[in-house]
Length: 505
Figure 1 (spheres, rainbow, N blue to C red):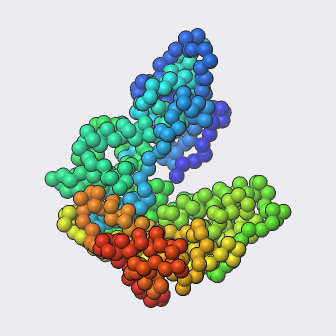
Figure 2: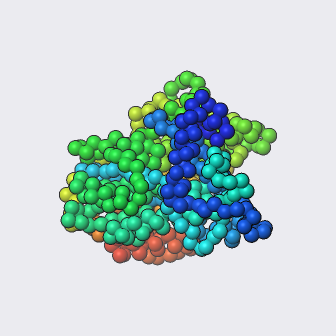
Figure 3: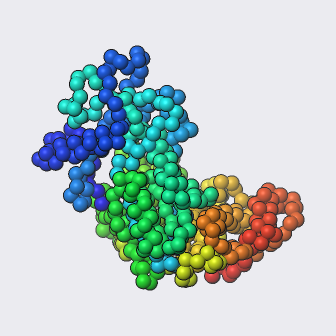
């Protein structure tokens, strides 16, 4: 939704320079409003101190707004002096949690709103007394005498610790508002109020709030008292996806039409023959000789395209997951056949732009904590699929009242011995069970109840027998940890395996 991003010098050569000048002034005002730095004479800086520099990201948004952001060059920071390398994570909500909360919103016909913190990283504070000096950014020179540098007082954009520092401030805000934090996902916050359950998700500086209309309005008002928020409004776009929420029907569809358009714009796809599959059925990609690999320019294009497809398969197009998993194996050593396979996936997506991930739970919910939530899973495996490594490919999906929550396609990290193919199936079942347990803990962390045992469906009797069996013999010793893990879940009545015919799988 945003257009070309420019550096400072490029923006200032454009005909709309006055607008960029104004945007730079607004950015300076943001810095001063947040007391983000202190101007000091360079002669006062201790000798030997490294002074970092900054860069600009200038972009004109689709709305017509001019936005200029000054970013510190974090790669110039020195570990141990400017930051602690154990304190540079960027906490974001898990994708499974996102789909669970969106499904709850659909079930309850709740209101969902988005808020974006203005100048979020200007709110964070240094935790360990770091002193970072920065040269005056381009465009700010007129505000300061020559020989001036800036001592940073806030963790501004670009610094390695900026995201975590803002998250700490966000946690203080939720504690002040008396919200609990999920013990399963640290970026999920909840509170049971007289107006029902209110949920928040944080994705760096983007915050999603869901609940009954009145409760959401009150929660949003509380948050806007603590931060300078841009009220984005109703949930129409999230994590790079367009969101079509039919509140009356209790459904939500996620699509990525803008990314599909970028396939055509950036990769110049030819028309070619239309295909109703994202890959040639029954084929597996393999490595080739080094002399047959594409050049660096094509390899860079390949990595860029696969990166886009990875995001698309993760959020809106699970049916391309296996194809994209195959493509991602060759990000550093692609052949021309791999590049053509990538274009095939892109063309498939372009030719089916209306497809997306549909959340359509089969149960309606009144918001009460008494409902028993039903989580189900399906796992399967294609034994020894790769003709070179003979590793198996596993796939699994989990559902909350038939609404898709997690979808995965994964090549096993080991070679599975046959054991009636049960070892490969057991690996897939274990991965699926782990996702189901995480989803159960997400719900229970908010005070909701889950129907047990959770049902995990497999289509291999050998795998089910292993899950039901405590005996460990010479032919199954190599998988006993996974076997015992599932067996203990069954004995504890948390998860039970169920056989279903291959056709149903």
